[in-house]
Length: 114
Length: 167
Image 1 (cartoon, each protein chain N blue to C red):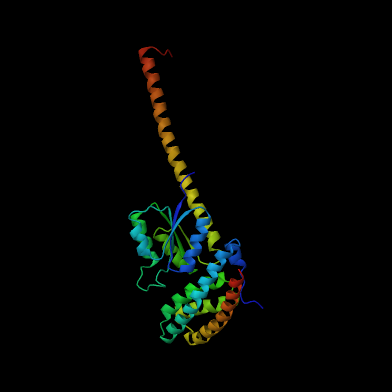
Image 2: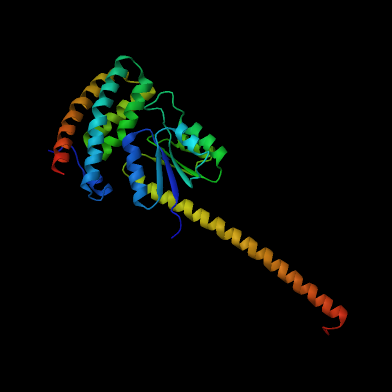
């Protein structure tokens, strides 16, 4: 089953392949860096910065149609922002990292076909 | 053709900024993108944008960068006529009310529907400007009509006094 859904992006770019590729590549560049930052801020217990990173990543996950990670990224933002349930953050970040890597592979393949 | 509306965007997130810029350029607006509020404020000395789309959280990349709400206050101080649309990932009524208290026209939550909502809000701003322009035109017209009626009444009175108008 596909992990990503490019329906929104196709509509947004009106099917312009160059633009689609541009946005997918931007996400492929940003997402791993953001995940690494989330891991680091969690280790440092800098929940305010962790919240900022999750907050920025949240709409991008939605634009790439990674539906199954929308709740996880929202929870990371919420828990780090409210500093509650912080003990669950490593597990959530780890899940996000694994699934996001798979989604990125799929997006990478999709971009190559454009 | 009239000059296109100048819509400037302040967004520190590269992808978000590009998306908003592409979307608004596609609508025919003259768009400029700034990745810090400070850079925008500097440009505001010489530039005169009609609308500003301003990110609420501007310290995601640079931790020391000024926040959107501070940029909003300073931008409105410099150019009160420019309408500001706040743009944020925070779906919070408190944040929205707070930004509007400092002069923002409206508030858009980032996400898939944000672009449609942005179009709707810009449409609303244009409608408001149209209404204001019409109101000004009617004010000028009514002033002119009052002056004309006054002059006519004056002429009639003079006519009656001099006998050129017989009642």
